[in-house]
Length: 274
Length: 253
Image (cartoon, rainbow over the protein chains, first blue to last red):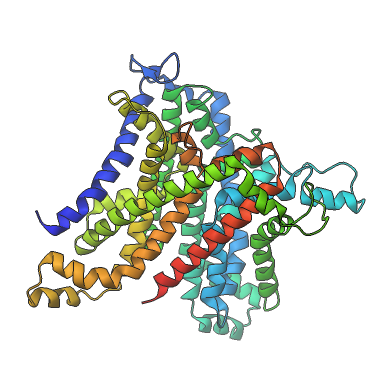
């Protein structure tokens, strides 16, 4: 056997047995019927897929999509000036970029917990405002849709900054000088020159943020306090409390299908970025 | 515009770091509530006196080390093979595994393990968590090692072959030593993602395999405790240092 084949075998075996095979089983389960104590049983059926269109569940899908879209839009608005600043910084570019990425590599759970610490009824912000006598009752900052969106923006902002920086860094500063010579104010130059040029970075960034937001589980669970149910929570629920594996499998595949669509849209660019 | 950008950037960095810094500051607070009462280190010592936290920490370390060793070895070999010749289905599936929502990866591994248990008399436990972690961290290893290999000069291996080295000798004595910083960087990253994972772990863990993130999650749901603040600081600083070392090693070319 050639060395290359030998080297490839363990990796291929892991991906086949611990990635593809599990997904295939999920696919098979999604077409089976619900077992009495969790699990699945015959007969084969389409019912789980039909239930996705039940207004109750469809509302959750719809809510997840718009929450992910709003979080993505906010990320874009925040990341663009930041990426532009880093790209145009004279020195320390790498340091500035690494400072954006560093929180991302530390614990996601702890970063979510940090926001809970700030936003709770007995959290830092409410306690501080109360001790300053600015408010009497604690403000309802946590356990609502706004908190979920904040958590998602905080969690995935680096995914937007990175591709935006990659396109903005290649921008020729002479273009801005030219725009200024032709009478454009700096704001107009950014809007009419920089924004169109950085479109590929924006698209890549939006897709990279939208995917994890759509499939988010931890953020809506902890910061939504069970009220803001998203697709991820629905999936988890089917495999734990509701014990409806076929339905959970069907929604998982729906989510996976959305990811594949976005991945197709990203194309080779995504692979380069990652 | 000239004034707006720096001010905005400062605000953005504050947004990124302020929650963590606030959490860190209050881990030294001599009170259970979020009002400053004076400096103390008692929460740090109480973390180590809490048997549940210590057990979770040990479990997390065992799992992360086992998963890191396996995934780094498997991933390094796979990346080397992929560098020599493209295998689109494998790179595609690694890329897909990286983008898959964690909850989907978690439930698919859960149904897979339950299905396997029909044939083998086994239960969920540390071993299933380790297997799950190997599966999702493999992509990180391959990406880091491949990025490093892409900067390599292929003529070094060709020279080794011309001088009579076998494929194995060329790998063992020429490429692998040069690759070592990349391998360490990949291993550190792998350790970080494994140590920190909650979603997938919680689905495939058994009764005796509670990890640190699972305990933190349970405590976070109950309410804020200064013990968790102290623990969070230790984990964030620890993982942060690993990531910095990893980045340093990766960028050395």
